[in-house]
Length: 174
Image (cartoon, rainbow, N blue to C red; front, side, top):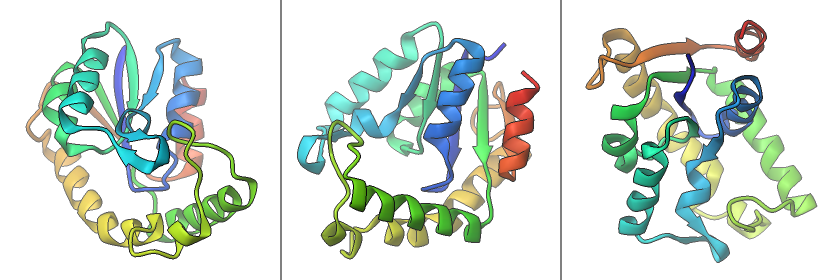
């Protein structure tokens, strides 16, 4: 069964898109942690409220959660049955993220509670592209260890997907 699934991976790896496709296949509702974390105006939700919302989500019978927020791990992961790691090469994630960000700057398509990406934000030290460079290696090491050894949550079924084709084959096989 795929009743409680967490989708993890580098920034820009396609966690949200994959979680939506998985939700369509399984009927479990998908939730992106970014939508719980970010408030309008790119303000961050108070940690206490964020953790409370994560707890409410984890308490549900079925869910698919997309996101890497380590502060929610002790709340959500104990209830998870499966963690799917989108472990794509840096070059693929980089180009996908660059394309996505530029398109969002142009089309102003709202994300994360109505927020939009801006050129100013994209060029800042807080840019999502900068975050990719800072976090990619850390995520790869962290999730690689978990998948190899079960990590802190050995009850979880860990699945590593290393290409978009493999992701589509996984979804087609459900």
